[in-house]
Image (cartoon, rainbow, N blue to C red; front, side, top):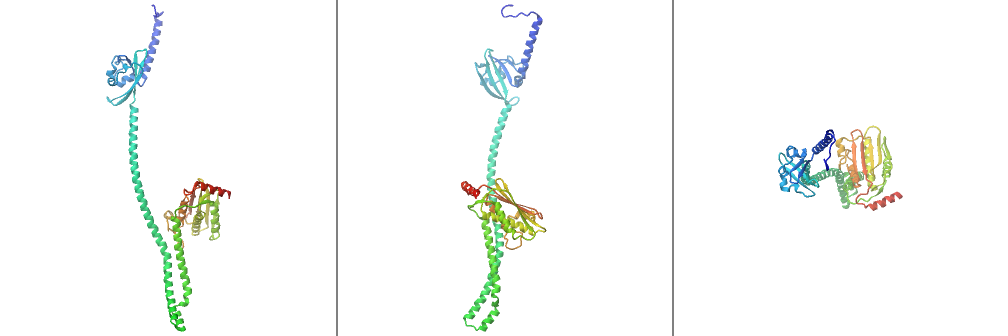
Length: 437
């Protein structure tokens, strides 16, 4: 043989070369058919030169039947979008959908292969991706719709809440009014009864003066004094006046408590050392402790907090006095412990006692205005309610934990930052000043 022809020296050598080529062909075919995407090699006239198993499966044909068939017959969408074999150069991408035997979506990417006089088309099944996109879109639409429903529900909830708040305010006002009427009626009773007695006495005194003006004899005036018991005037009028004074003072105390409870407006504060406040209260109350009652203060290093010294003193004093009353009413040795600790850049004050404690119902009502378990007297049931109101005006909160017969813990927290109504610069200047002093 001449030219480029190769002459094998033996049939055995030719057989070996043929085996190598056959093996390579099978490897290529196996690789070609193992690709999940459909692949077609097209002649320039649009007929299939070769396809892989994935493409044959997509169209439901035998891979051996497809070579020689027109791609436009197998893929009708080629008639609409144009045959990929018409590409002279470059590539193109198209997406199409089939509904038989079931809905599928494909993406076809076609490339010209220079030198081979062929076009390669790669067809990818994008059904799952398309379904995921549609699902995401549907979920997004549902989310938008749900959000609109939620906004509508929130508007209804807000409206309902406003009505409930208004209703609760009315109920609270009714409860407070009833408590206020009850608390004021008692001292008013003292005052009214006292004025009744005074009116009776002054009528007698007025009669005596009229007798005197009319020139009554001394003996007649003496008889008038005895008959109307005017000789006991001083002894009986003095306690009546004391009762009136007590009643008026009690009413004044109730009004002061209510004013403290509902007071609004700017809170003028200075940096306060709560440890110092506790020490003063413990010292003053400790001087008048009942027998068998002890107060212990466990004070840790705490930051200064902005507040009103008088207001914070009243809070600590109220809590300690309540604790002393609780342990005095219990059997055995009474102990009250006050603890201060730092918490979240603020201060927590805890007043704990081993007194009589409260059951669940009493504990729930302990902060209600005019609620008290004490016997009638100077206590108007506003102490804890006012203490809570003062703490909240300082930006903190107060809570109670108690069990019947196991004592009570009352705890309040005050933040270190200044209330909103005090400028930050003013607070900073005050804290600097406090640190210098």
